[in-house]
Image (cartoon, rainbow, N blue to C red; front, side, top):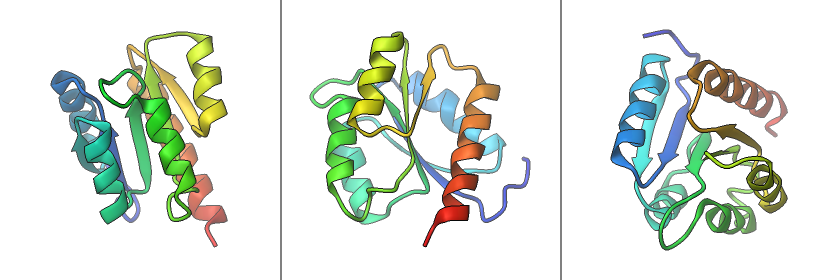
Length: 132
């Protein structure tokens, strides 16, 4: 396990157990604390109780998709600055829509772990520098 200062906590939200397993395994191997949710409503509950340092969120989920969850998060003053990274297999239109609803960044599936890791590091570094 690689050391990560202060061991940031990441909430991974995906309705597919295999995706959760792969992401959790990778992120923990990089030194992050990882919590998971397999529905947007469970994620919202977890976010409200104990906000993580970053949210890694699948776009395509049943009942409430990643776009709607992002909208709800951005309406909550306590969560407004939470970095949200959307994950999707779809192309540029999904990225545009995601950024329009308040996502911080976007990674494309299949996920290249080196890209995901760099994205997470950049967002967490920026957040720690500018946190008031």
